[in-house]
Amino acid sequence: MKEDIESLEFTLTRSMTYTLFKLSELLDKRKKLLSNPDINSRDLSSAVRVIDREIANLKEEFVSEFREENFDRINYYWYLRSKE
Image (cartoon, rainbow, N blue to C red; front, side, top):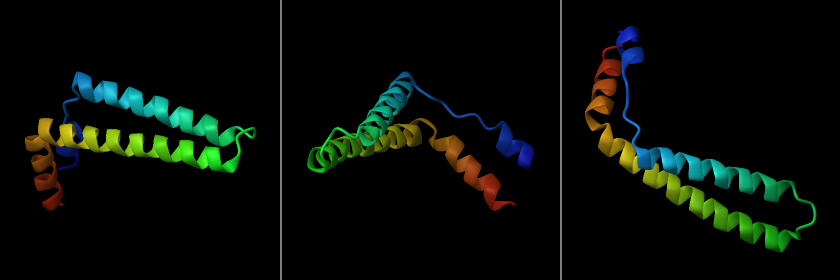
């Protein structure tokens, strides 16, 4: 059973890969902003909020496409998990 779960392969499309790259860039940008002591707290919180919204949108986009592309494999995964 465990081997079946471990052998499952999921599809990662080009657009999903691109979304992951954009997410990584935004997370790096957010980290740099938070580590910059020269920005006042009002500007910082505003910039972080904008980045957080973009991150949330990209995550939603990625999950939506991942579910669509891998619907059968996800269901099979849950089927295998239910047998454990």
